[in-house]
Amino acid sequence: MNLTMYGVNMGQKGIPLEKLVDHDTLTEIVKQYAEYLETNSMAISASLFFKRYAVITAAAALDYYGFQKGTHNWLKDANFDINTFTINVQKSNIQLEEDWRKVLFLDHLHPICQFLAQEFKIPSKILWENVAVRLNRVLKRSVGHYAEDDIQLQVEALQEKQPNWFQNQNNPFAAYIVHPNEEKVRTTCCRYYQLTKKEEGVPYCLVCPLKK
Picture 1 (cartoon, rainbow, N blue to C red):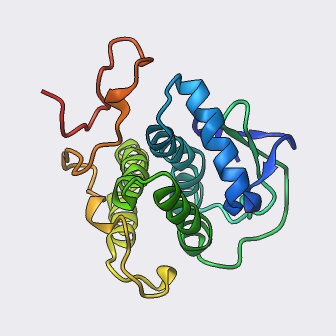
Picture 2 (cartoon, helix red, strand yellow; picture 1 turned 90 degrees about the horizontal axis):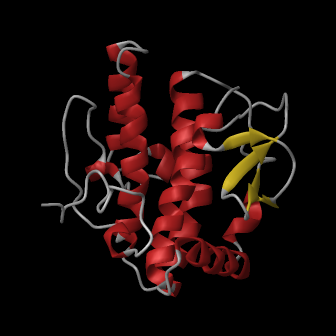
């Protein structure tokens, strides 16, 4: 398993992912991420933290389970490094016995999203589109590496409006998933543009709806 490009590394350091649904733990992470971003806005920090977290969880999982057809349950014993905002995992032979989408989106990301939206007064649709943006990048990167039928299968699964893996509830990011051959500007704004500290030459995120 090689997911280092997503910030998933081999190691033990960090907070168990299951503890990130704890409200006090999440609040501390958002505060620390705000310091890293050099912003006083907890709403901006919450949005961009969730966007970053989507890389090391959702994007990595789509690549590993969706395209690489991996079966190891690396999410179970993963630890979040609050200093580097990456994930450390250990070698394990434990197999993932449930649908990875349920384990990740419903059981893990959903409660985190609910808390961030309520506590930091940021619409949940912004947070879920943050996740979709990261998933779309994996889909686009898959072109030329995987069969078109396989890519289409992943797109359709993520676009399903009331999937079994979300307990037949409305899929909160379905409308934001696009086929990699399509171009889509975001519907919501992640608020990256409001940061004072930005990546050089990148005043807006790549799919920002406010970009001129």
